[in-house]
Image (cartoon, rainbow, N blue to C red; front, side):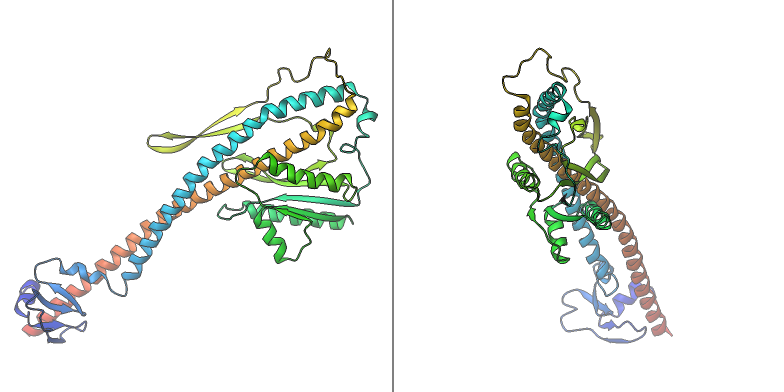
Length: 373
């Protein structure tokens, strides 16, 4: 007697998981066309009944986990695409501020070239003073899910604090970004000022931060201002760096070239096109015949705060671009991992389902053999 004949002949019985144990069918099962039950799961006489055996204690968690992983993959892929678009906008913001910065650097370079070293080194923003206290300004992100971006900045800040402590120097903290603010609160560190790091830094935000730093420096409350930020190297690489903002160094009043990343499509998939835009050297200095109506010292006193604000704004923009690139890279890795995990779960689910069906068929054949004997 085959398994099919067994199911048809014993339509008035239902089988438990133990081979050879049968009980009468439940009322109403014959009228519904259900022949019998295996393990408490009804099997339809019209075919396809074995598919209902999948939902048991072994395969149900796998199906649930598959749904969760696929939903997570959709979320991470969407976050990757959003971050890629925001990286491009952040780079566009940096390029929009370049013309003003380059013109300002030309004026500064020309003024410094015409002045004696002793004249401009006495300016408050350029004057070197004995260091008693250092103001550390650190930039992080407001949110997570960006790989090691925030962690690298926290480690770099801890390392710098340790270095200053070993040198016997006091320090104050100005924190930009919610992640650093929460980190300082958990460790009960004294913070002079704190700011949120917006996804689109503005000149007004940079001006507010710059006013705080200049007030502390010019008031001799601190003798040096150091900025810790994440330098945007490429879409796959960034580096936590430190830079002395005050006093300004006359030899460092120049900008570097920019590496531009553009999101494109290639054969139906997203790709990144990289170009390098060098700084324009044409007209890097003003004409030597240009006459300044005001004294060069007065002009420098007025221009240096503008230059400082511009450098701070550019650093904020670069940090935001590095954060977005780190988030895009992290979400890309998460999407790839979710895809691999989905494949593994599909294999495990299919194996469990196949083993379950094989076991149930063995029970049916074994029950038929027991009845024949």
